[in-house]
Image (cartoon, rainbow, N blue to C red; front, side, top):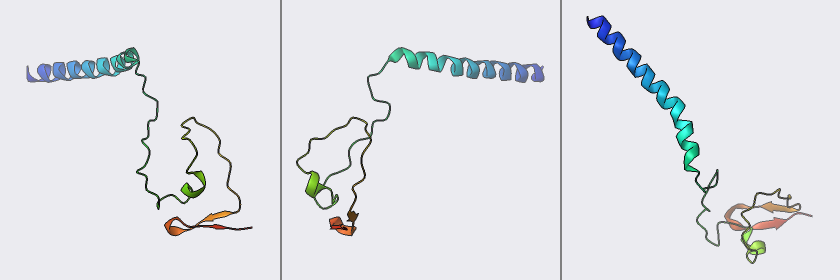
Amino acid sequence: MVNIMKRTFLYITAFMFLLAAFAAPVFAEEKGHDIPDYFVPPPPFSEDIFPCSECHADLDVDTNRRELDFHEGYTAQARGTAEVVS
């Protein structure tokens, strides 16, 4: 009798897990959130953290995904200083 109860409990538990596993993607698709796939908040900004701020301070923020070109001739140094290497 105890073995039958244990086996029945295991079957019901396995069925519930399978039901939840197959139902989760269906319910997730129905919500249809307008949140971007990978939302990363901007870092805390202060003048001395980013050495690029001296040249790029007046540019508007562009959050569109794009290929960025390498800045040749510049070597970033510690503590927000930059050095031109020609």
